[in-house]
Amino acid sequence: METKIKIVDKNQIDENIINEAGNLLKEGRLVAFPTETVYGLGADALQEDAAERIYEAKGRPADNPLIVHIADYEDLRTIAVNIPAETDMLAAHFWPGPLTMIFEKSGIVPYGTTGGLDTVAVRMPENPVAQALIRAAGGFVSAPSANASGRPSPTSARHVLEDLGGRIDMVLDGGDVDIGLESTILDITVIPPMILRPGAVTAEMLEEVIGPVSMDETLMSADGEQPPKAPGMKYRHYAPNAKLVIVEGDLREEILAIRQLAYAADRKGHPVGIIATSETLPFYKYGVVKNVGTRENEKTIARGLYRVLREFDEENIDIIYSESFAAQGIGEAIMNRLEKAAGHLHISAAEIVKLQKYRRVTFVSGTDSARGPMAAELLRNCDLVQEYVINSRGMVVLFPEPANQKAEAIMKSAQMTLEDHSSHQFDEENIQEDTLILTIDESQKEKILSEYGDSGNVFTINEFVGDNTEIPDPYGKPLTAYGECFEVLNRLITKLAVKLNSLTEEEK
Ligand code: TXA
Ligand code: MG
Image 1 (cartoon, rainbow, N blue to C red):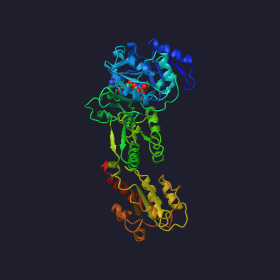
Image 2 (cartoon, rainbow, N blue to C red):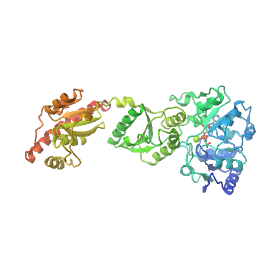
Image 3 (cartoon, rainbow, N blue to C red):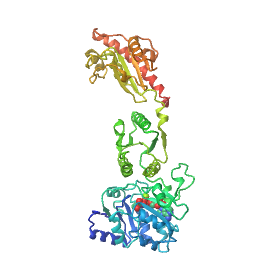
Image 4 (cartoon, helix red, strand yellow):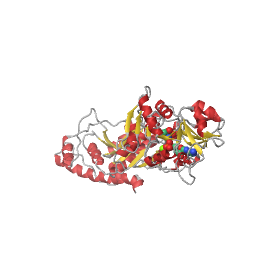
């Protein structure tokens, strides 16, 4: 089947296109269309076999009921009975909009649409293209999200075509959606009303209008013993191809933990992805890093989440680490979808961070022109299980200078280089709790301790690795002296790498 693609401007709707699409729906065909939440795959809600086509096109289990979309409030009475009193108030506040309510169904709604249930889910979308289409189709359009079952919901027409191109009759392309996560589902047939799926209409917003609402507790739990009340919520929807793990902690710890996880994966040759935010993006060096939105406005994160998950499916990625978000307001919906995509896989950031005694290694020599930079470069070339910032400093550096030429010649012959090095004076800023300070000899250590006090992380290299071989000073001597110094340093730094690796217990 050829899928027709029609671009529709929601501010200037082309009636001809809408009528063509409406007629297709009346004939029992399928048309995907934009709503403010996600793209929907529309069918006439009152035709039993139209619903069947939806299940077939999506590859969706038939016990998963559809939401019936209406454009005019009075149409609710045609498909729902025993409508609770709060409905008027809820509709006045949230319709049209991203709220779906569950009612007892009327006889006119086929069981094919409700997945065999005696209740029906109803929503009135705000998107003008959706409203025009619903009216053109006769008033009742059932529409699940227009993704293939098990894929993230589509937030653009392109996503719809990726999943359903060739399987449906038409796509109305109204551009990117506004909200990006599916509607809030509220069951008002129970007291107090219960949220079956969190969305952009939050619990707080509902409570302001109708008082206490409850939350289907099974949504956030991992045990899977109790099935959720909305049948569709039990499936591992929104699942990316790669394994997705949520890293939880305070933001600083999350960043440090994800850095380490990405470094470790990269080191083992596993392609790794990171779900980051505008604020945290610059902190990540390894892996494919994607910006889901800004923490200053969580709506942007809701809008970006499914796009980012889909983008990862196009990359060759084994594992994705995601930052987490506070489950408040729209954050509740964001975390609910993220949890589902992750199959409730979590890592505690604190557990990982606590394994990292040091995050920086600073080598200190006299002038920071030969032995210090050599040691630093040797360590950078070691296979370390943890990522360290490795640098060098000197106790007497008057102005920045490149590395000693003989030192550079020796390093070059060992396929390393000090080309980028420029000498720096050791100062107070180098004294940090997470920095391991290793001096070339006792004199630099003494000087640091007397100037800055003993914070317990200053050692000579010899002392730290437990090897007394003296590091010779080649300054002013021929190249061979630099070669001998290199040999000693090479041995000590190899031992240092082993020691550092043993500190990161994870790999023991
Ligand atoms: O934002 C949305 O709601 C989008 C757009 C297209 O409107 N639609 C959407 O539909 O997300 P779908 O089919 O992907 O999700 C419908 C959810 C499923 O979890 C389903 O189990 C639940 O609504 N549902 C439908 N009828 C129900 C009912 N009678 N009782 C309980 N849950 C119901
Ligand atoms: Mg869906």
